[in-house]
Image (cartoon, rainbow, N blue to C red; front, side, top):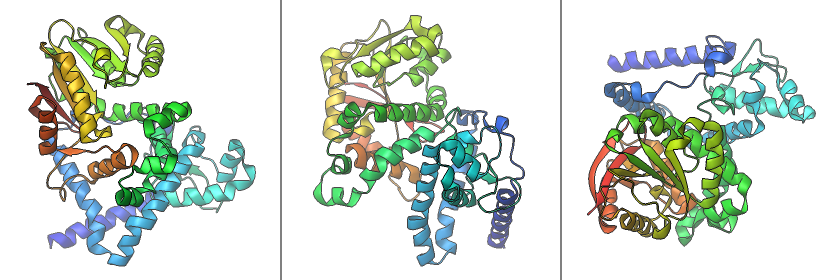
Length: 415
């Protein structure tokens, strides 16, 4: 009886969603949609756990109710079609074109400089809208149908506080070619990204600065989704100085400094990134510049790593070690251990921690694991793998602090 009731509720919800997509009804205004997403760190832990379990159930439900052949096509071909279409719409800037109200594909194509291809754009929007990304405004009129943003497509606007536009552009231009070489990478032990591009990702970004800029924007917007949980789920107040290793343009350290008005900080990255960050901070974080310093260097070179400040120092590495294999990660950690020697400093890693029970774990974590393997020969790690890695580099794992996002904070210090 419970199963029948649940199925009935699911069917009702799906019908309501289909009607809403068709009529464009019940969708807030563009101004409301542009508001930042609710802060996940404000959710109670039971709600977070229920949400994760429910999401996993909904993800697996089609496997139980669809014929296997149809479901395999959905998981492979149709999912690929949808993802590629949405990435194309992000690159075309369609959500930005809809900022001032509904438009037809013909109007959007003309505004974008390809006036004769409105029908092609309509076909892209037809697939994405049927998947819940974008909505119809008014009656269906083929390529003269008017489309508008909804709560999903609004995240493709370049000026949305939680935009994923640059992440999708990075995946489309830099990631898809590498993923296409995944099988060859498994058979040959060669890096898929190198097979696709003839060089490693960091050299690729040096030679293609426009791609590095898109990548940095993608990482910055990803930070916005995860920063609040990383700040609220750990006691940063015990530190007087924070050193963000590989901190890019400093979005995390800026948020930490705003939360802790007495903490001083150092932002460390490659020299050209540190120089760019200094210019950016003068414009975007001018009220914080008296408490921050910028350092350029290489986290494989102990001579360039900033030394601890007075009092207790936190060295922070966010989503760094998942870029590297174990041997390279150990070298990075040993470099930090040398810089931290004899101090009260601790190292706080902000990384994903995989569940050994991968069947019940979040699929997104295993997706990121494969993405790191394809792009940089990196990996996501389980608790036991983190403990072993840190031990080989001369660190002890103090505690893992889960957050209400997909990452955890790993507190560690040199032995």
